Length: 367
Ligand code: NDP
Image 1 (cartoon, protein in one colour):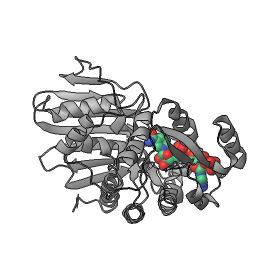
Image 2 (cartoon, rainbow, N blue to C red):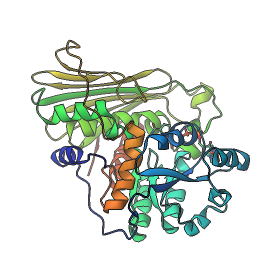
Image 3 (cartoon, helix red, strand yellow):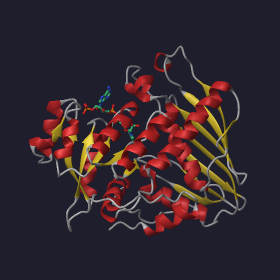
Image 4 (spheres, protein in one colour):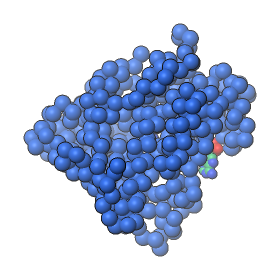
C-alpha cells in the first residue's frame, strides 16, 4: 500500500484537502492490479508512463489507444497485451466492453483532454488526465461533471505531488521551519524548437508556455504556500515575428496575491531553460533547483544554499509509480485522489485570469 497518511494531513493543513465522492462500485479483487489504458503513445505516454508500470504495485498496462496501428501493435506485443486491448481514436468507446481496463490515462495534446476524459467516463472507466486538465474552465467543469455522473474518479497528472523532494519541501514549509511565509518565486521555462509541433498550435495546445510549464510554477505556488491566490497580475512578452510564436505566447510573468500577504512571482517561458522554486519565510528559505523535473531534484533549507536536504522517500519507487498507484489505490478504497479534477479546475480558473490580466493589462481579482 502506498503511504498516503502524511500526504493527506499535509493537504488538509494547507486547505487543499480533496472532496469525497460517493462510493464507486469498482473494487479490486485481492491481489489484482488495476489495468490502465494509455491514450496517445507519444513522448510522455509511451516514453515515460508505460515503462513506469514496472515500478508499480497496484497498476499495470492493460490497453493502448493510438492513431498509429503499427506502433500500437508493437507496444502491445512488447507488453503481452491481447489484440482486443488495442484501440484507435475511432473505436475507443468500445473500451466499455473491456473488463481488463479500469482506468484510462489521457496523454494527448491538451485540446483533446476533455473529449477523451468524457468518453472514458461514459465508457465506465476512471480517468487520469495529463496537465493542463483542459484548455478552458468550461471544459474542465464538463469533465468533472461527466466523471461525477458516471461515478468515476478523475485525477490530474500532477506528478510533483508524488515526488519526494517536493513533498519534503512542502512538509517543511507547512511545519513552519522557515517561519512566517512572505514570498514565493518560481521560474519554469524550456526552449521549444520545431514551430510545427502541436504545443505551438493554439487549436491543440490552448496556449503557450503557461499551459505547459507555467502551470508547474502555479501549482508550486499553491502547494508550497498552502494558500489560494486572491488576485493575479500578468505581463506577456513574446516575439511574434519568431515562427514558433505566431499562435501562442513565449514568456509570461505573473504575480499572485495570497490572503496572508505572501507575494508570488512566477515566470513561464518557451525560449529559456530554468526550473526553480524559492520560498522565503521571515526566518529562513526553502529552495529547489531543479524543482519539478524528472530527476536530479535538489533542496536547500536555511540561509542561502548552505544546508542541502536529502528528502524522505516518496510514496512510490518513482514519482510516476506513486502517481499511478495512488489512483489505483483511490479506486480500490473509494477515496478521492489528492490531485482531483477540482484541483485541475482551480488551476484552469487562475490560468484564465492570468491570460485575461496579460491581455487587458489589469489586475484580475479571483472569485
Ligand atoms: P507528444 O506530441 O509527444 O505525444 C502526443 C501523442 O498524442 C501523439 O504521439 C499521438 O499519439 C497523439 N495524438 C493524437 N492526435 C494528435 C495530434 N493531432 N497531434 C499530435 N499528437 C496527437 O506529446 P506529449 O506526450 O509530450 O504530451 C502529451 C500530454 O502530456 C500533454 O498534455 C502534455 O502537457 C502532457 N505532458 C505531461 C508531462 C508531465 O511531466 N506531467 C510531461 C510531458 C507531457 P499516437 O501516435 O499514439 O496517436
